[in-house]
Length: 317
Ligand SMILES: [Ca+2]
Ligand SMILES: [Ca+2]
Image (cartoon, rainbow, N blue to C red):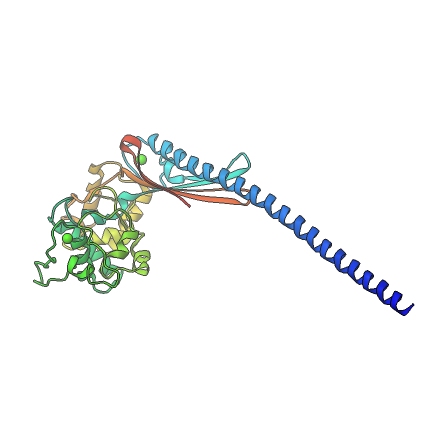
């Protein structure tokens, strides 16, 4: 009897173990099925968000094509592109688009005339002043390294003012722990700056709002930030007060034509300022499009030229 009771006990225990295992298996299976289903849904939503984000860029491009008023002044009621698109519902999703005029930034690729070793001393002075305004250390050697990175020759840049060889060519880059080639050509992205001697991700973040690698050396007076305006001229100096007056004025009335720049005469210190560096419109814009569909979220970034409706850069995260 005792043996029988023991055997019965053992069987009961086995049954219990099997039931527990089965239950665990069933739960696991149900869970996996749920996960698979969720993954499919997420994939579907993510894919839809991807196309929606891409569509946002297309929408941004077409808004820009409709802007033909001859000036670009973010915030002006006539400048629809600058309003962007905020959380616009499309099907199950939402899309937001922001457009930024890059002509308000200093184009680092104009430091050296393309495919040459000819330094644009006006732009060089601008970059130097900007770095100094942003309290960036070693502005001289950073600017020189940026020149050498772009110019076609392999001679280290010697600053004509100081006589110092402060740049960096192949001799520097080939001696790194992980040697790289000196580009000797224009920057293809702002991220590429991190390869240039002295630049770091932190420095990149600091200068990113003020610089670009696209467009011309002209600065749009309607969209430049205070620091960019201040960096434009050393003689006469554009003081912070003067730059802020320009910004206050353009909020009242954008500079719609180059003739409107005569307003600058109203600021006594700027009466003799060279109007040459200025423009009142852009041609290259950065479009950022963010889309969500349920749990799926994607972000697209593009750089486009208005002339010819050209896509210069495109990335979807
Ligand atoms: Ca416009
Ligand atoms: Ca070079």
